[in-house]
Length: 625
Image 1 (tube, rainbow, N blue to C red):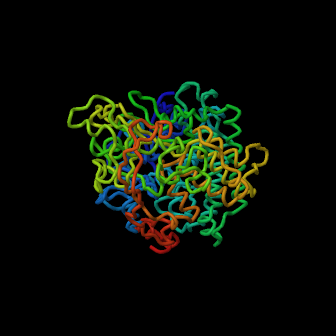
Image 2: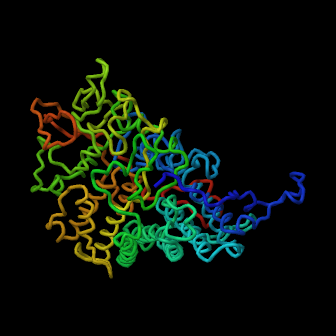
Image 3: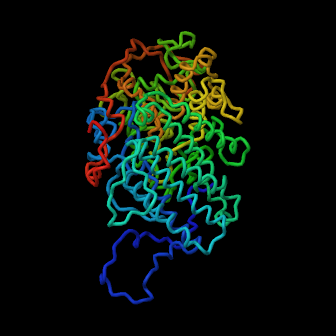
């Protein structure tokens, strides 16, 4: 599967004529130079060209910003003195998503939209989403002008427009709460008086659009007449499975404690919404089970291919990416500073982001038990032995090999990480601030000794999706548990239990199943869902940030910590620590608090832009700001 979405629309009409008032004589024009306002919608080729821009408006949250600005939760901490969104939030500045010298992907850097075929737009979610919503409404208003098209083509156009309206509203509501749900093209003279809805009211409107879109779109464009001209290059196009997955997520979020409290005043799970979520996820997973969709879990030996590729133009993640953004130039995708500046040791060329030691504790043991369980076998004197295989895939520990090629004599000392107290890879400003480094998204050879393969020469290519298939399985498990009461429950008409959905993800990673003591207790099982999501979906998008918010657990995860330890002389067998390197038992290990994030209850929602809340009186600012 190629890494680009082929453009079906031969005529790409940006909306020069959209929503603009006319001028009598801004140019001298001949009659044959006039472009009709309906030309973009008259046939499938033109209309699809109009739709294509909405794909380009999906923010690439890793490329449009610096460093780890998409990680806004408890998973990481930046080097001292950094000014990323994460740092603003740590200090209690939740206006930080729209201010500061490092732009958040939620806001972007304010540059103009870029057409399909160029680089992705640099603007972020807030400006792009409203632009896309208006564009979707304009397209829906012009469906009757689509004359030269088959019924299938008309369905695909309408389905895409409905999906993009719903998806952009869902993303906005996730961070800012209920919003006005605009379903028509606003005129420049219209009196704005559209009130904000509750989150659940917004979610119901989103669900209506997603349900309609799912009924109009195929599971796989390659198996349709419309998709035949671009067969083999349709994997990023909106499908029925994408619609159903987001329908489930929309309902699950609506049923989560934060959104239920915003809508009803009750900070509990809403059983009805969770049941609706489970049904939607089950319908989507039926298509996966029946192999009607290309989606499937890859073997753990291919796990890295979900996040990065080296020396190839293949887009990572294909087999598990339920929804992601298009790629228009591989050399400019992935976090521009990631391989160089985030994920490797500063001693050999990077390292300004460190995993929070508290967050790393989510990675349990290979037997499936959390490290806090007395039966887990966790040894605080040998804390990195026999851990979940994803621990060794994602996290760099002391003694891991980080140089693989020949190194100059003055660089040879850095071949293995030195993350102990006083080690060359410990620093408050660069390298590891916490005793850990992150390698989930890059090969360890991404350093300036092994040739520094990185994004600019196409040798290291990072791409992170908005939603992966494991996310769907884990959301299904949560929806079933909260909607039907037990870990052994299923959605109606589907035979996968919540327990089996979690174990499916663990089995792929070579991790033991959820222990029966957790399965039999709904509260304990939910704690395992929370932990499993933290591990499988670690550092991806803002999944963790939004999970903690919707569960109203942010106040329980405010501490960001480091581990301090001395390096012992007793080596640990490779059978206990399988990551390449020379590992020694740590001595005198203690956990140290670096900071506690400043947080108040009103910070569960981000503040709206001041300029926008002054547009009209029934569009108020979020409480507390």
